[in-house]
Length: 183
Ligand code: IMP
Ligand code: MG
Image 1 (cartoon, rainbow, N blue to C red):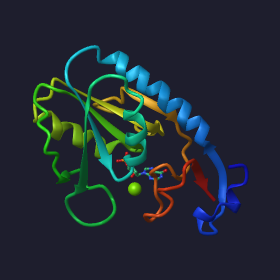
Image 2: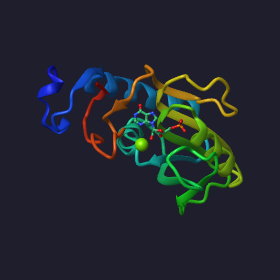
Image 3: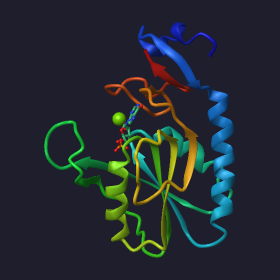
Image 4: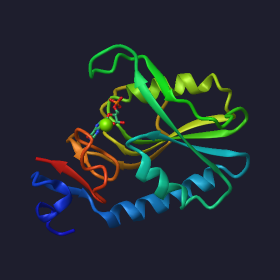
């Protein structure tokens, strides 16, 4: 899409620029899939998408991982009130899939502070997976120190507010097929 301002999906919002085009995303997701398949030569693999932001990425990514795997999703929420992450995460939807003995790959849309993801990893580790790794489409590299580093990264992201390809602003723009920076 050459002219994002003319895109009816954007409800008239100004887009500063397209940061990653549909083609950029398609190419990188395909490469990531091959990288992931290579990293798991054996064992059972469970791709666990963190909703809602990773719904599109997870759907595309698993189609590019040429090995047997299972797909499930988790929905996480924070304890306490307010929009600021309280640092305590809980699962609003708990996967039915048993994780014990499996390679679990947590699929995230974007790592910003990384707080949610770190807590989630602590929680999922109690399910005794064979391994637990994180795959994030975007990484802002803001967090100084992540106790659980991100094993697979799609793109290094600029420190701007991004929408599209699953990422929202007030629940809008998740269906935009490219990633744009809001003006
Ligand atoms: P963290 O816990 O600070 O890493 O926050 C991660 C979550 O915040 C992501 O899963 C997104 O839902 C949201 N988020 C962070 N940065 C952006 C952005 O640029 N656009 C849209 N959502 C974002
Ligand atoms: Mg969000």
